[in-house]
Image 1 (cartoon, rainbow, N blue to C red):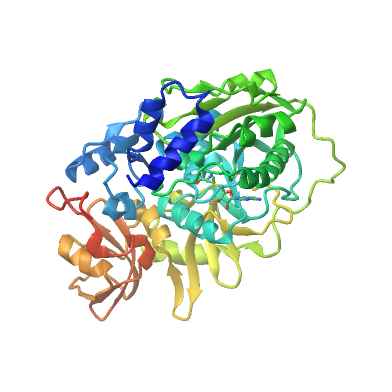
Image 2: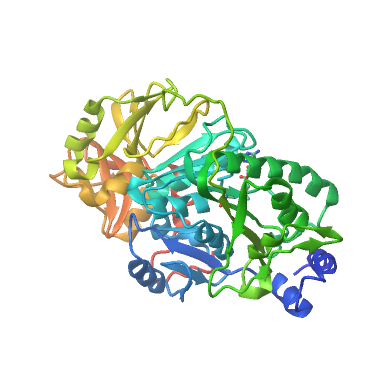
Length: 486
Ligand SMILES: C[S@@+](CC[C@H](N)C(=O)[O-])C[C@H]1O[C@@H](n2cnc3c(N)ncnc32)[C@H](O)[C@@H]1O
């Protein structure tokens, strides 16, 4: 660790000395790299199958006891460099960040708003929890960060998330339409100290500025959640000015705090007094996590139960759920894909095809279309195809997700060397009777890799470069290739 970092850790310690039970343990933990945490994507694999796969790479994953099928790995493992990652078998999320969604406890069939969603680990976690009868609206103010969120949702194959680009301080949505809302607020980020070479000390001016945003975001969440629903307010910072003070200033009689503790995680109860300022007493139910408590990053989580009183409003409910920019696409496009890949109707039942712009098609679960009002969706479920000059081109995300049902125009590349050169974009000579010219689905054993184009006996990858985590040559294949050394 460099000396700047150790000065920053000591400055943090000085500020929070009244709260930190064991200063030596705090400093030791702050200087220790954070373990990698990842969880199995239930849409594509199972915990045991992923465990087996990671062990096959010579790794030693340790289960996280408080979230199913999540594993911790040594900090020098590069989780984006495996075929399993590329095929969407897992997503990477800091362990303590999982806790915000555990506290929110989304249930199957519910409609959830993720007000500050990018890069989207918690969105994905919630999408899996609400299942195919529920829905998540994932909003963020940063267009650039939403692109990364869309990539993650495509890689995982989520059909039940709409992403929107809006200022969470005022989304203009009909009040009271979400069962639960997560406010994972922008903050001064003190809790990320183990990830940063140059951790920032607490900056009062920044903290005051961001506190205004945090207050508005929480007020918006309390407006959009149903009466009696649940809001979780979380940050990755220790500062009470960005945590307890925000809730104390906004909540009033709109709701009350409920216990947010998660066994067996060690936490410190939220503060009811800081630097001469008294806060509401139910803030003791909130949880502050210092890094040395559970060998994680730092975090703060508060769970709020919205009062049963409806939000006072005169807004008339909107008639149309989505803007004209989005329409239900003709079934014919889906029929084309179905017949090309021999997909049984059963895998498409209860799903709707949407179109945006002139050429993009999306597949989404039918059940819950929230009223988005003025918000323009960036993505609706899974990007499945686009119209190009040569015709309808399926996305890699679509073929990866529906891979297990594909019965026609698919090919299994058996040899890892062939897979590597295919993923690098080099044409492969393939002698097979089964493939028709055009777009095909490419597999390697259990991994659904995605789209290739087959013409004149040659197979060429159509998999977007970013899907391969930068370079195919960095992928690790088996225990003999060292997943820690790249
Ligand atoms: C802590 S990060 C969210 C992390 C995310 N929940 C996750 O689990 O990956 C905070 C996010 O808030 C977004 N943000 C900042 N101001 C916002 C606003 N006014 N409305 C909505 N999002 C905002 C930032 O772009 C950033 O992506």
